[in-house]
Length: 378
Ligand SMILES: Nc1ncnc2c1ncn2[C@@H]1O[C@H](COP(=O)(O)OP(=O)(O)O)[C@@H](O)[C@H]1O
Ligand SMILES: N[C@@H](CCC(=O)OP(=O)(O)O)C(=O)O
Image 1 (cartoon, rainbow, N blue to C red):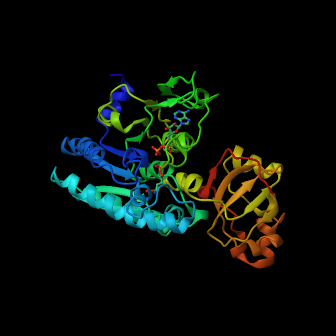
Image 2: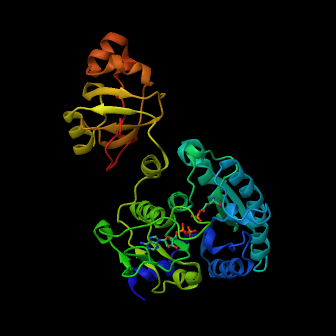
Image 3: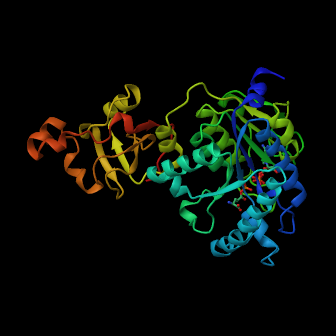
């Protein structure tokens, strides 16, 4: 076993995520045998003294059969109805399966909004920590019944990466219906297995298609994105099939290992970068881009040339360079409506004209995270 794989075996706290295709049958029911096999692996890890958070998809897929649906419905309301039925059945199945090992599960349903609002985010963190401290096995899923199309994770890969950071996990194991990341869709000839991803360079030329199964969502794209989030947060990731769960957890040479970055960003930075979406935009001049990106300074009104969107003080907003590329995101200190009259003004002038409360920066450096963004569309 190499050093990095053995770090997975020795990890104190792991997050394991399984996709719908690994937990349910093509008929839209729970696959009891596969659930029991996976539970055995997780329970063994717990009994050996490890802590485990399990992120389980499959609510919608497990609700299809009971609702008499042959395939995943397109409309959100029917998906939510299926999730409502399926989630109850899933958690009941997990509870009885873990009970065979004397373990009790705790259900944690999260929305993207819970990850986005800092107070909710802290709450989720406290709940998960408390469950682990009490020796429970948390089972996390997206709260599908209340999530709307706009603010949905949709797949659980990104959610699992954020949870891994939230609980300060030592490793994230992503289980799917494919045994590793391939250079291209594994159903196509010529695709080769990738054993290690050490940096972005190893992903060059890799094509990540959409879901392979009828029930999965996102396919490899969301798994690679989740691996980026987790490794960027200092958490190594193993991506493999549910059938190889035992070997993956034991640090065996299976699947693809995404090596962790050395830097472990603060929860706030990770939250800002990956769990929020900008509620508006501030357009920066070149000098402000240099100050914010180059020198990691706070953003002052003097370097802002434009404001877009309707946001309130405290909201996350995107900072764009003059060409419209997003370079950072931060929590803004002013409402959007207050900003136009501040643009281009020095903080000293603003304080003299409007009072000392206007001496505050637009965004403080401690509430800013740098992004390597896409060009803006507006
Ligand atoms: N480069 C790739 N490497 C591996 N699998 C890929 C790749 N591109 C597309 N896929 C497909 O992604 C599927 C896994 O995604 P998905 O069906 O969403 O799984 P899950 O339900 O486990 O989340 C695989 O079955 C595979 O067919
Ligand atoms: N929260 C959803 C997950 C949707 C989904 O298909 O996710 P995945 O199988 O991980 O790609 C569910 O439980 O049905």
